[in-house]
Length: 486
Ligand code: C2O
Ligand code: CU
Ligand code: CU
Image 1 (cartoon, protein in one colour):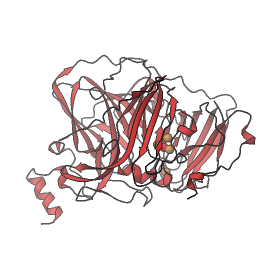
Image 2 (image 1 turned 30 degrees about the horizontal axis):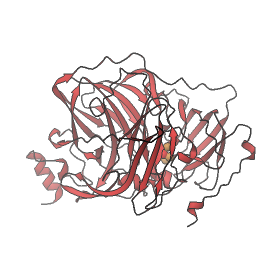
Image 3 (image 1 turned 90 degrees about the vertical axis):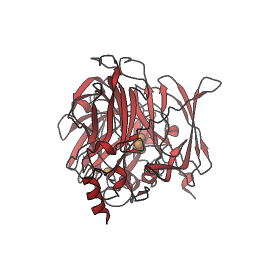
Image 4 (image 1 turned 45 degrees about the vertical axis):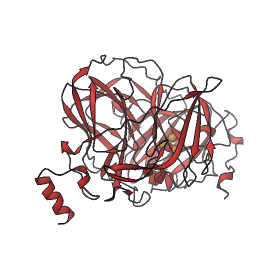
């Protein structure tokens, strides 16, 4: 009996299970019985206070073994464990220090995606950590409440390092909207969405750098678990959803079409909850949503196809099973502590970025020794991203931006808040109003790039420095890259 016959028989006899489907076969959707592994919630990383009050977080990049499919342990990479990483949670005003140790066999970096910090602390491709080495960036958290994340950023290797499992959440608290659910793991739950292509033995296969978009898998993992369920114990749950996939774009809905509220985008809360029935996330984007549950009910979080190359297929992601008795939750607040809108200044500077093909921006491939843009500290600028061919997105390090328009149309209300990553539809132009920070460093760049990792790795990335206003023309456009010399 071949696989297809086996699956047909298994389906008829009710034996179909998630683990019976090999790569190439679409896992059975809406087969509630298949979702029987409990969702893992990444542990919170306990900081140790240093003598001066700095909160000290320790991360180790390491190899390990995990069961991406039940009963089939395979090699994966993780932080402080075999797969993915613990959640870092810090509050505005905290001084933090990270100690990142690399126990992999190859060099990597750790980038704090969404963090406002000096370029040297950013963890981009210039802050490589050699095998056996340690890197200790430190900064003061000074940004609005947000759901950020961290992941490697070694140039040309990011797709592979993330695909192996190196990614974690980084939650920033700002204490201003206490009515939002915030008990970690109970009614405040991170969901890291990733798709994989898994071989029969459960190991991730597929070439993350081939084809137009790299890897689009047919196995959906949430927090590293395939076909998971979660027991809901509160009337309202806030999910902090991260698209941690290499290329896939998700259109998230609930199986029963229920409406829910978006309360936050990548870089901060919205001014008020926005009711929706679908939320779209491209790689690197986050959304904070609040979902209401009735006692005893069961519903799937799923993604539906959207008609692009990077969002093919309908997949169930997570089965939510509400307990018979739910703890009561505060009403959803009418107003949220959103950061102030980013106002376009009169005579705002405009920079244009053209995405064509999949390995260059404005016709130039990423060059670690070239500074592409020089931005005065504290500037608010318009960045215009023109996409001439197929799906891309655009992420800018260090900043917060708001989408002004997509081909002249305002963004959806739920995506109108502060962001750092935005989907750029094929053959369209997205205009952003971008607020830059104040840390100056003329020789250490931040990155901007497509967050489809295959594109980022093949050179669809550029570098900018933030400098003292008035010094722009004196800044060297070439920088030394010592760590690349061997
Ligand atoms: Cu999430 Cu430059 O990356
Ligand atoms: Cu980033
Ligand atoms: Cu792209």
